[in-house]
Length: 286
Ligand SMILES: Nc1ncnc2c1ncn2[C@@H]1O[C@H](COP(=O)(O)OP(=O)(O)OP(=O)(O)O)[C@@H](O)[C@H]1O
Ligand SMILES: [Mg+2]
Image (cartoon, rainbow, N blue to C red; front, side, top):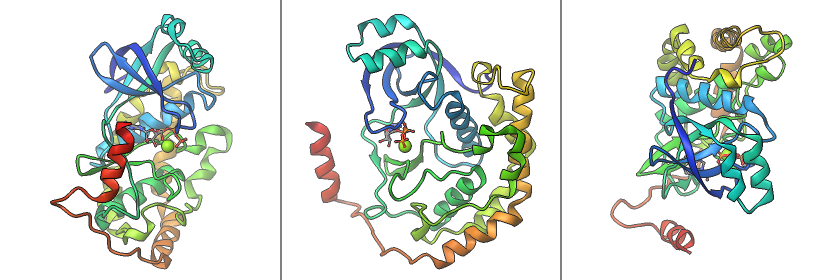
């Protein structure tokens, strides 16, 4: 079952995104779209893709900005014309269903020293990351893009760590969230307000819809689960458990915010392209 995600077929491999740890690639598809494709045959496996889909669905339900996701069908024939042997192997290992993230052309990686971000939004992002166990939005690797004047959340592949050990997964419900390196910690994130606003919106229906969008192909064959739907239920149970246990992990996040030194006020000039943007544009044009 794949409720919610459109399905496209890859028509051309354009280039690898070398900065991505999992060797995501830029691809064109038969809907004329361009996608950052995360491959099911990559070293990190299919769970990365499951986490991406569940978190993006949840984010969208909470009005957090995420690029559109699709599933990308990959024909093994496309590997034949690819000169790079590493990419060729990856494409071969990924025949079938992969994940496509709508490519945001001209987007910039979020620079916490150069961008302003609203404390209310910072609070909602930090709360969301604590709920989903996302330690991959640090100042070193923000996994936030800035596009058309708005931030977009990307790269949720390292979340939902409970799915790496289903027999002990319940322990993750109450696990502390280490916010000390979060990229938005210095933006005065309003986490208590975010909790009051967002927690009631994470209903079982919302969780079920987010998990329903994961293709069966990435859920099949998990040990201890007879069917993809049984495994979907387990995701819903754990996320609902994590939400219910926030009395355990939220105080730690609030304390981390309290202790964080506020970053200096930065405001990009509205009427002029700032110097760093001009520099980036030149780099990108080369
Ligand atoms: N939808 C997108 N539009 C434009 N650029 C993107 C998009 N998705 C990712 N990128 C760029 O590619 C980089 C790698 O993507 P992403 O972080 O999703 O991959 P990853 O393999 O999980 O990376 P890592 O493990 O290094 O964080 C991002 O930091 C960003 O610069
Ligand atoms: Mg990343």
